[in-house]
Amino acid sequence: MASDVKSDSCRQNAAKQYGLVWAVPRGLVDTCGVKREDAANTVNDHYRRIGAGNCGSVWAAPLGSEDTCAIKREDGSRYRSLYNDYVMHREVFHTLLANYSRVSVPRCHLYVSSDDKAWWKDRIRRFPDGHKHCNALITDRIPPFREAVRNILISKYCPDGLKPAIISSEANQDCLIRLYLGRIRRLERGSRFHGFSLRNYPLHLDQIEELALDFNLYARILAETLAHLYWIAHVDARDVEFVLAPPWKGDIVQYEGVCANPAVIDSIFLGDHVVWILDFDCCGDIAMEKAGVEQAVRAFYLNDPYFPRPGRKTLMEQMLWTEFKTHFLEVSEAILGRESPEASLPAMWVNLIEQEGHDREYHRRL
Image (cartoon, rainbow, N blue to C red; front, side, top):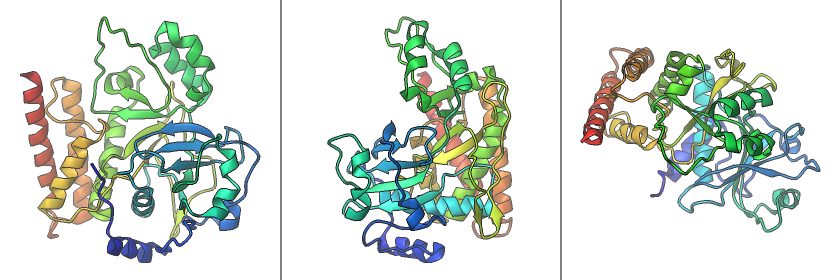
């Protein structure tokens, strides 16, 4: 199903608000304070694929290179739009940086069109043979976890027969952890499938508890982030991802004098890390009315289980949902105020989420 792509008028408004060049005549747009001439510098290293999704493949220079950007190629589903990703990424970046700083957002540098011959001329050679020009999005690369963390995850969760191959695999150096607060592992006995990958490794709620990580803190960070996306950016957060990864070590990011200062979480097992939000190509605008709230509810349940879910049977899941819901309502009230015309929307969202969650649990148990 096609994602909700912004209309031209919405794109123009976003362009005016953030000082963008909306027309994108040759695909290259300077966005987050990165000079075009600096962004155009090349290195001799060839790109390697570090991920893939419905929108396309993601590439980067080898770790340790001075080139620390990630390149998302629009070579996946024809129903996905990197331009929508670009516009929404910009809106989310500025909203969270200017209003809230406990989650990290990669800087969004450039949108490149497939017909930008000047940009692709210097870079197509860095991709493997057979790759062609396409639309692309250039962002900061989220730093992967170091070897010591990878070895802990492999030791605790990787099937014994796969451990030597996983340890020596170059692909598993690209280790990010998906934060699944809404799911507990189902350990299926007798299954023949024993796959394992550290790329976007899904860390479930029971594993988060096992690693002595603060799942209540994660829940509050996600609740605050959703509240800011809904009531300030007016974005439904459809299909966004939340991952754990080390904090970015580059220059301090500023927007109108505000410094990015994400919550750096200390952990015996994971070391210093932050919650990152990424992938905005499926996001759409929401109206500040019932229809917009219903759209946000649909997006919540279409997403992977990053958020706690209502109606679950274990006490830990129930308490975590209460923590998430309570904090979401508190932050939403602080944003909207008690007397605003939109003051009733957060409670409406919670009620609809809980109704849908209980219905799903009821049918699942039949």
